[in-house]
Amino acid sequence: MTNEQIKQLFLAHGFKEKLQAGGDTDLNPYVYVAARALIAAVKSEHMAQGIELLAHSWGGGNCSAAERFSSSLNTAARMSKTYALQLRSGEIKTDGSILQR
Image (cartoon, rainbow, N blue to C red; front, top):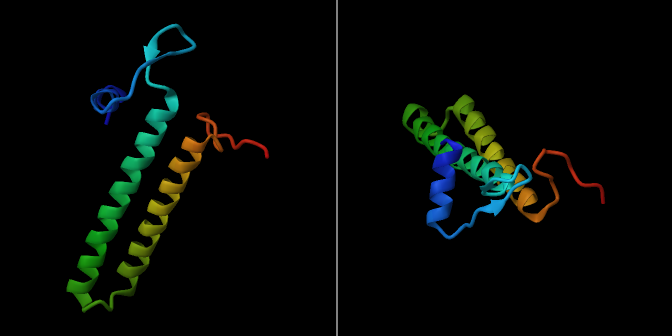
């Protein structure tokens, strides 16, 4: 999705544009970062489900390579969700750096 598509979707669901450093109005940068993390998590989850179905149909559930790949995708999905939550909480800045505690 482009930033414009993300923006239109979020505006349609009640998000508001804010004045940005350059003087323009737009969604805050972390909204786009979180949206992309969510998209990645959903894609990973759907791929993992597809791999799991293939593993069961190919080998009656005994396809270890497919299961390992499915597990890796599930891990990636969990990491994407964690990253999005950390962005939302302010633990990670929008430039990707981690705040010191």
